[in-house]
Each structure stands twice: as C-alpha cells, then as structure tokens.
Length: 327
Ligand code: ACO
Image (tube, rainbow, N blue to C red; front, side):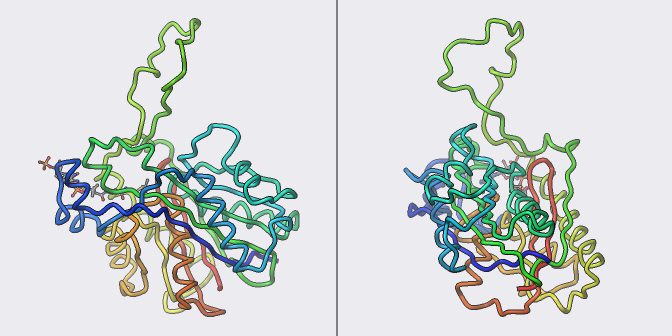
C-alpha cells in the first residue's frame, strides 16, 4: 500500500505587487529582480490569514478528490508563518473546513515543509494507520519580511496549496529527506516579542528579546546549498526507485529562483522544459510553492495517469528532499 494524490487545490491572495511597485519602496528595479530571480510579481495577503488561505486551498483539493472534510483522518499543515504559536494552524484549518475526525498538526521545515508533510502522511498511510490525509502548505511570509531590506523583501510571496493523499496500490514510489542544522544560520527568522508586556524578571540576560526578528538570509550561501543538494538528492531518489531520468515527465522544484532551477537542470543533464516554473507570478511562497505548482499543472490537464513526477524542496534548517510520484 502506498499513498496517491487524488486531488489538488491552491489559493493565492488578490493583491498583486509588481517589481515596479517594489522599486517605489526599496532601491531596486524590475531588471535586477527578474534577471537575478525570474520573479516579476508576487501576491501579498491583506486580510487573509495563513489558516484562511490554507483552508481555501484544502476545500479546492477535497472538491477535486471528491472527498468530504469529515472523511479526512489526518491533516498536516506545513507553515513557518502562522499568526499563532498555538493553536496550530492545522487546528485552525480543521475548524474552518470541519475536518472533525482528523488528527491534525503542523510541521516546521520552512520551504521543505510540504515535502516533509507529504512524507509523514505517506508513512501513516503505508503503515495502515490512516487511509485519507490532507496535506497543506500555506504561508504569509509578507508578515515576516523586513520591508526595508531589498535583498530579501523582493523574493517572497503569499499563498497556499493542498493535496488529498489516499491509501492506494500506486502513487508515491520513493522519498529522500535531509536536514543539516549546522548550516541553519544562513537563513533564519527569529520570533518577535512585540506586544508582550514586561521582560521576564527571572531572566538576567534578556538578550534574545533585543535581537532583530524577521527573515534574514545569506543569499549566496543558500544559492550554493540549493544548486548542490537538489540535484544530489534527486539522483539519490532515482537510484532508490531504480528509475531512469527518461521516465520522469516533470521535476517540480521549490519555486525560489529560476537560476537555481536552470542550474539543477544542467547538473542533472535534463532539458529545462521538464522543470515547470511559476515563480514569475508568485515569487517564493515557501511551503506553498510546490503544491501551488502541482495544482496548476493538474488543472491545466498536463498530468496524465501513470506519469512519473519528482517534487523537490529545499529551505531553512537547512532542510531538503525529494519525492517520486506515479500520477
Ligand atoms: N535590487 C537591487 N540590488 C540589489 C537587490 C535588489 N533587490 N538586492 C541586493 N542587491 C545588490 C546588493 O546590495 C549587491 O550590491 P553591491 O554589489 O553594491 O554590494 C548586489 O546587488 C549583489 O548582491 P548579491 O547578494 O551578491 O546578489 P546575488 O547575485 O547573489 O543575488 C539573490 C541575490 C537573488 C538573493 C541570490 O543570492 C539568490 O537567489 N539566493 C538564493 C536565495 C533563495 O533562493 N532563497 C530562498 C530559498 S530557501 C527559502 O525558500 C526560504
């Protein structure tokens, strides 16, 4: 028994922010952003919360799968930008969609979160504990950005994607996951304490509170990590599943940067046409990027039963991994 994706859904907020609009806020230009990243615009959430976006993507995925919220036994949410430390975003989404029977929890693996969530759900399905799962990647990174830092605020966007995963004979064929906490400092987001009154009177060195919160990144280090580890883990996965590259129809990589994707294609000696991209319109939506892309391809009718796909994510932690799916 394995897990098959039987439905996909996604949601992006209405507000569209172009590179030109960003150049009115920070010292940047469409030419710089597009040539360095492949991004032209991104969606930015206004009133939509992380849970609301995730719930809408989930409803669309359940509709496509023909699944009812009450049938969902396991609901996993990958996010690093939820408005609440608790209750979990998964609990909030459970309430929104009415998945009353489900065991629900969040997974924190930044941009690899959706893959890590998919792997966790797959393990439950393989072991026979549950038969129907919902995995959601939802992010509102706009609330974690330093909007005065041109080197990071131009890269990210908000949105959500979801899949229904059901216990079936065919579907997920293999998975590799990795983490290296020793390199974690190259991409961080420190928790803020805005609004909390008073400093812990028993903490004699309340140093953490004084440090800046929000996203900080050593871009070139992240770039070097991604272009090395993504092709490496895809090769590892192909060896594990004994699959040739010719058999793979599409590689769906985390949508962080078009140059990372071109470089991965080159290292894998695969044509760029096998690497669909949509970051031009959405920027980097972290854990939401892979399920949004998957949903787009699915709704465009580009995925046929029996197609083999590889999804690969990478991000803060550092974390990375890949999964092979027979559609
Ligand atoms: N507009 C104009 N100039 C800029 C901007 C901007 N938005 N941002 C930085 N610059 C300037 C810098 O100040 C620097 O100027 P200087 O030479 O006068 O000092 C110059 O551009 C070059 O800066 P670099 O950081 O060296 O630019 P680089 O070519 O490395 O591109 C980028 C930066 C796009 C961030 C790149 O390093 C990258 O893509 N890294 C990977 C980041 C990534 O993918 N992160 C997400 C993955 S993990 C996750 O999803 C959470």
